[in-house]
Length: 476
Image (tube, rainbow, N blue to C red):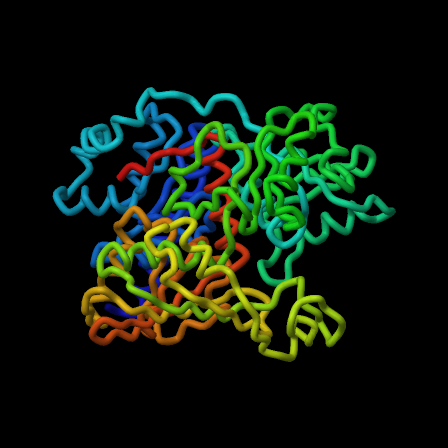
């Protein structure tokens, strides 16, 4: 291919991607149809991201799809009477172009593939969501909910509850939402309404409520009713403490963004979300590490059987550690997080059994906090019931990431150049590093990357949707 042809192809793809972008927005905002490309959302994707996603499709289908191949399918979706759903345009385009040379049969093909989503139910009544706490996870949940907002998405972020209320507090919190040292600038516009104590993010009016205790809040005075309260403070982790939220007028259910204690159901979406029942009032979304390792462990256990194992977590430092040496109630955590690797404990391995009971008593775990602000890694050293070979294991894990029911939780990379910052912003619970996989006889060692902030927040949003009955099938 001549140098000029490379540039011409790029410009063609860029032009087509610029045509695709508004169509994606139209489908999502007007119909509630989220377009995916082999499991990765294209909603709010920039032109360059659309092109990159098409290039990456070669890992799924063997050959890279071009924007010109998906454009006619997306244009056809706009004219179809679709109900809210997720449509994997990558899988559909791959199937269509394997057996067709032109678009004459496209309408019939899409009608057959998407018939179950045509002329169905609408989104229904909007459902109120309140974030109790506005730390790292709270701000990322805000970004995700604002990103998803529109007529086709029923969850509405109505309020955020925080302590404080001093002069300048609202501006400070808005600034932390607007700019993030790890995750970059907020994608859109943020306006502060000082008079009404509110933040307007991309047109979403979010009431800021100042309160010291959950029972001090009356949500109904802000027009909020039957709300899901997402507690991301970690202050209360048992039924007694979290039930305080339910005493607030306007609150209906509670989701904890930390491991729950006692009889609280700990949910790893993709593995055991079916345990969430309509009558459940308090649910835990477990921890970031538990979410990262459980889907991979389930995939491995289903195929090879796990006899025993040890999970070592190499975890970025968190806000509960000291920046410099100072008193801390936790062992070793008083030492400077920015200067030291800090050996500490983790309950993530043990917590796996709450989502995957068949692994009860089979796993141990420890953690090493390291001087990085985000993205962690779990090293799973496992003894299997059946022998496995490295390449075979990697092919299986790659297929699980591409084609299985766990594809929304597991990602896979075989790059020998990936480092932690490359995973900032990953929307997957965990990313298997195939280049590092070790396997011999009935033993294997897996390296699983995860964005312990953003990837986990995506899992939390899935749990929120499940609790509020907002789940759409992915059609392909």
